[in-house]
Image (tube, rainbow, N blue to C red; front, side):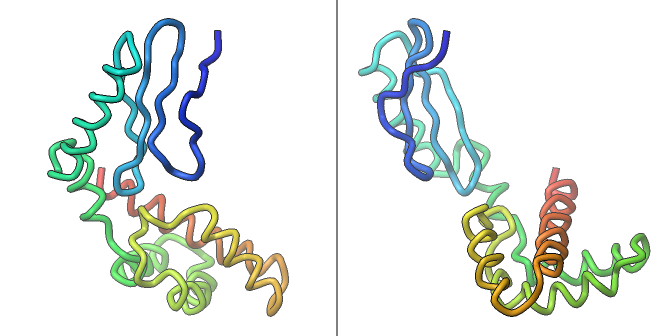
Length: 153
């Protein structure tokens, strides 16, 4: 038994869907997906969604504070390079990748870098360098994102 979408999920919009005889809520807060049971009828689920949104705005979901404490790429760069120099043979390559990545993603929180932004970066970068180079740069960005998530947990 699948789920029936009621409100389309274009991008990262709030979403209500019916699965069996229960309504579910799905929305995003500071780059994190939040899913909750809405109830047995749509009206109850819509009211609960409003309450969850209000709690999220006040920072009472517990997610908002964690996402806001996520570092930007520029803030995390030095810490990552310290680790890379000690553990990776390709640390010099990561340094070169960060020189190119920082002007684009430097002021963006790591938790807010989206797949669409990375894909747009790759397409723009392909005009200047080979595909292998862009793949290495994106791999570096992915490694930094994962490392920062592990440290914040």
